[in-house]
Amino acid sequence: DIVMTQSPLSLPVTPGEPASISCRSSQSLQHGHGYNYLHWYVQKPGQSPQLLIYLGSNRASGVPDRFSGSGSGTDFTLKISRVEAEDVGIYYCMQYSQTPTTFGQGTKVEIK
Amino acid sequence: EVHLVESGGGLVQPGGSLRLSCAASGFTFSSHHMNWVRQAPGKGLEWIAYISISTNVKNYADSVKGRFTISRDNAKNSLYLQMDSLRGEDTAIYYCAREDTSGWYAFDSWGQGALVTVSS
Image 1 (cartoon, chains in turn yellow, blue):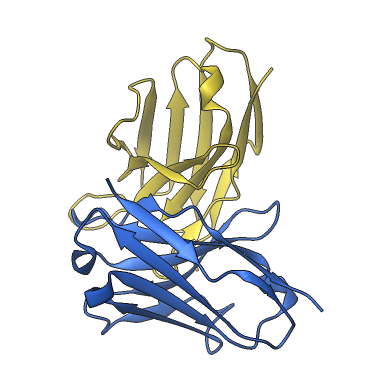
Image 2 (image 1 turned 90 degrees about the vertical axis):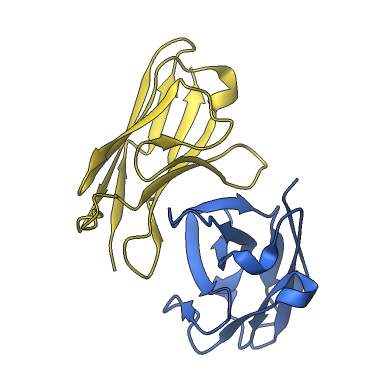
């Protein structure tokens, strides 16, 4: 199974400041056509997860442009350019390059 | 608007069975592969099962293989998860999740979840 490792696991942030979450996979998630089957989700308090970024760097519908994803192969990053109070929650990376689909442990973003 | 609504959760004794349902609306259910993902209390997300559009492909996590069965009824816009031989470690919120149709292999919509508690 592909192991997904996120860091940090806890991220206190000041509103207006940037934030960055790393996700590393134990195997490359890039396929021959260049796509990286790495997605980011956020689970806000009391809610179900929602898709944030797909294929490593594409914002899902309705996601604010302060969120961006980057990376390829085994190293990926989710960045929030200026954190807002509504961004609190747990952020997960997920790979679908290989079955079984696996998730990172989650990174809890909270406001300082 | 896309809606996925799970039902059928509850309290069950170890060794017992439960069947979860996921009712889909607001989209063409028969065009989407579907999945079940669970989350134990205070823990992260765990993918547990996948079913293809035509039901010819079903995949399971090792943790549930041989005990859980995923199925769907495209005519009823419904997804199911039959859970047998339940264990304490199966206690979790169970989410149904829709796969996109664009080839991203992403879960682009999730239900609100159904809580399953396995305890004597």
